[in-house]
Image 1 (cartoon, rainbow, N blue to C red):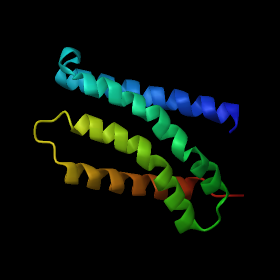
Image 2: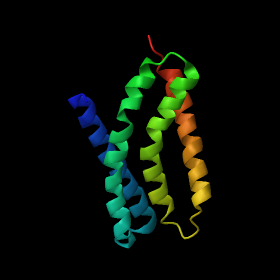
Image 3: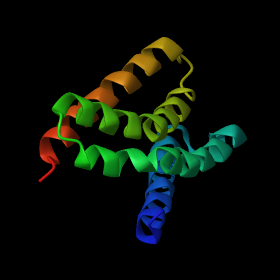
Image 4: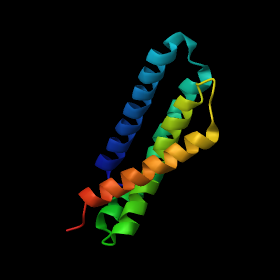
Length: 120
């Protein structure tokens, strides 16, 4: 893997984790965040690394539906970690609603990225 891409993915994973902690801390109080929440933020790093090969493949894919699907799958793991850990803090947490929101958002990300990033 390209060292620049690897560094970008790790930094992006850490940035998403930091934002998740800040948003949850502001909403619930930093002292009230459970230990599992802090530890699961570390899952964002492998969640960014595992689908890393999908983005270059998607950028080179000509067919729009396949390109959109690859982008959506690339965003699925990191966004799922971000969304589920934030939603699980709520007392009225609904796993089905959270999963639906993750899938819908990733599909929208995929469609938008595929439209913006057409292969040359």
